[in-house]
Length: 217
Image (cartoon, rainbow, N blue to C red; front, side, top):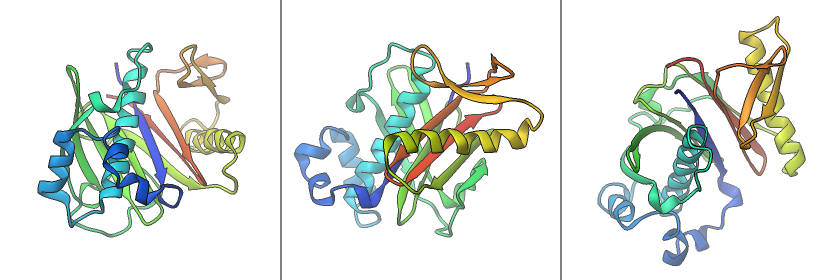
């Protein structure tokens, strides 16, 4: 079964001083992940960015696996990032696309129980955005990020659905599309009233919304 998961963290909305405290970041990253940061990433990205990058990856993993195991409970400490490769090129990546230029993004490998998943992440001055897939390639993954006018929860949710629907209409221009919720709470796409097998994930934080969906395996 294919799935997708994504998450976004707006950097102006985080508390940097609190994030850098061990009793806070210890709830998000494991001892092995802190060691990974100290050995390979310290001096290359700020600790607070690493912590929230880890959060965005782990939240994306949870969303990916929730579609497969609906009763799953989010537990960041059980989702372990074993590898992070930094971008070799720091040019801007854009805000919407299909697949990623691997030279421009952070590439990670993640384990959760028997599952090994892979992520692509963008860190800009404004946000951290991550998408997860079961394979270490993303050519069939569509994704987008958008700045919105209000951080109110109702507006965030509506803006995310509108953004996704606009993208889907470029693929299915003649169809009536609706973003709904499954009985387990994750989003699904209805085309002409029937659910279609395209997994989708939505995310929002502060003044940004994001989506991802997987076209095929």
